[in-house]
Length: 448
Image 1: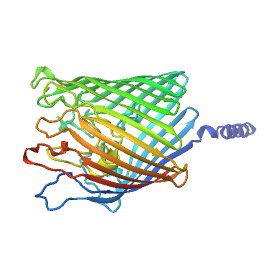
Image 2 (image 1 turned 60 degrees about the vertical axis):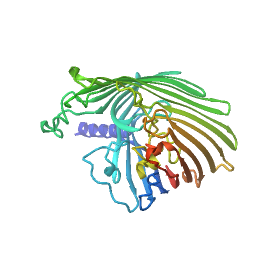
Image 3 (image 1 turned 180 degrees about the vertical axis):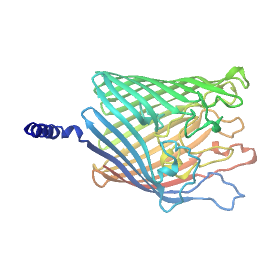
Image 4 (image 1 turned 90 degrees about the vertical axis):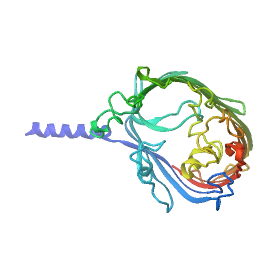
């Protein structure tokens, strides 16, 4: 009997001293914003046959919460979800047959309630760091060219200061047969029809900056079963650098995509199409407290209408980089308002494509809590359809002010005016005309 009690006592002591091994620490971070928006024109056509010009005004919001479950030192489960991403009092979006939102692991209607985007294991081992699961994809180097989207990935990182090497495998799309996609789904789903990405990155870091080179190889087979099937196999090279030199912060990035955009199977017509696309930017901000000044030059090559066997316009400026309130803005304009169109398929906003972009800006922080900034931006098309009247997207003037109410709560008010360029007249042979556009947005943001 004593042996039994001794055993039970020993087991109890073991359990007592092992409580920390079973415990999980939780770290929660997040952001909530509520915003109001007014846009004077849903399209920039000045059409005398139209009975009225349409404007829009509404409130919208989003909650984003990240939760890390820290199991032990060096081991954690990372999660993140978006919730209540909707217009106040507005209609819910209609079901779109399961098509995912561009920046989410859920559909738009799921994000209007709740959609989990990240769930992955982060393990810091003696031989490097491993990440396995659904996580952020599409972010490399600077913010330019980035389009955040969650994807299933396996990542590995190893650092020997000042060098870091990163390797990743990403499952972009899976079309295998399964309980969800059975044989009746052919040719929508089929064997060997997946889109995969393989990445390798080297980064050198110093006190006031870093530089790196990322190389991605894409193998996309989703179009193989079409009557005229093809595969996409190409490389994307991304050198970048970020540095601070005295009062000046510099960023630069170049993207070059090359390979086969359409590699026709079995020599079937139409002919193969190569990809030869460029994008890049240089951005500088100099701070002389309380004033700062900055400038940006960005470029995304357009597709030459005279070359049918090559696509030069496959890249864009990304969804994460939003240089203006209206022009080339994805999150606060395109995602919520929708496309702002001109004539003959021309579009004002969304991620930057087929353009040269120039911006100058000046800001002042008269008190630590207040930041007021004005920018002037000008953009022209790199390539335009031969029948378009002009290549000028326009000139936009933006004025924004952000006030920190507390360390975690801020309020932003912005006004943007777009002097719409003649690119949006399309074919001007019929005397088309266009309107300027302006926008007012205000946003209350809580971070925690």
